[in-house]
Image (cartoon, rainbow, N blue to C red; front, top):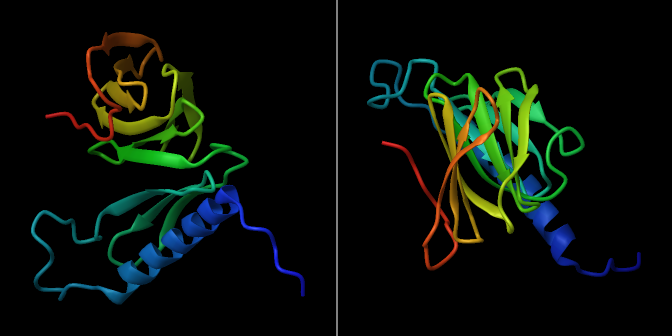
Length: 168
C-alpha cells in the first residue's frame, strides 16, 4: 500500500485519539482499594474531562474509565481543543479551542454558549460559579458571565501568551 503523506493536522488528530484511549486504559488499570479511596476523591471516582486534538470532548469516570459524555468534533470544535475545565459540581464543562473560541456545555453535552473573544488560540480556561476565565495566546485574560455570555472584564498587560489559569 502507498504511504500516506505526513501532515501536522493528521498527526495531531492521531495524537488526540491515542491520548483518549490511553487515559481510558490508565483509568481502567488503576483502582484504589475499596476501603482506602484517594483522599478528596468521591467513592464513584470523580471525573476527568478530556479535550482532543481532533476537536472531541469526553468526560470519563476516573476510576473505571467509563465514558460519561462524548461530544464529537462535528458537534463541538472543528480544530484542536487546547483546554478544558469543569465546574466544581460537574454541571458545566468549558472548552477552549485553537480557532479562538470557547464553549460552555451542560452535563448532557448540550452547547450552552460559544464565544470568540481572543485574536489567537484559547490556551487556558477555568470555571467558577457564574464566571468563566479564558486565557489566550494573544496575551489576554477575559472574564465572562455564564448567564449572559457577555465579556465582563479583560485583563491586559501580560507579556506572553496565557498558558494556564485558575480561580481561587
